[in-house]
Image (cartoon, rainbow, N blue to C red; front, side, top):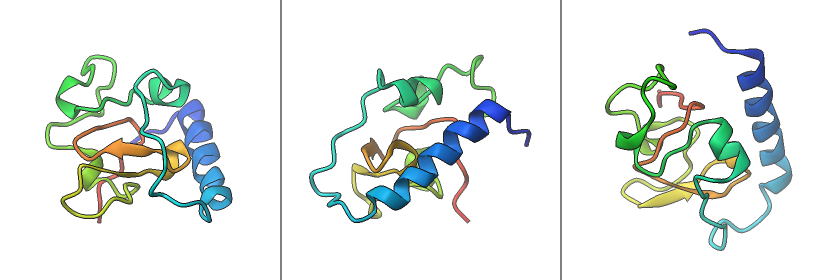
Length: 103
């Protein structure tokens, strides 16, 4: 897997912001919109089946936020916080290029 410098910088900034935001309540976290600048940069889609496959060739069928290592939602929940987006809620059936398969 190759990681571009730009992708690495976006991901690093997102993860670093998580430490700052970790004390905030997640219950009232806003839902991430697809037109959010970070979401657009990482190709976030609320429904993984709508990913622009030519643009995001890393995407593979079956990858969703729910089975991503970064997703912090409870099993079976429709949404959950994601540190990539500062703890904003993402859809469990969504996807972005920061996807890392859950171990």
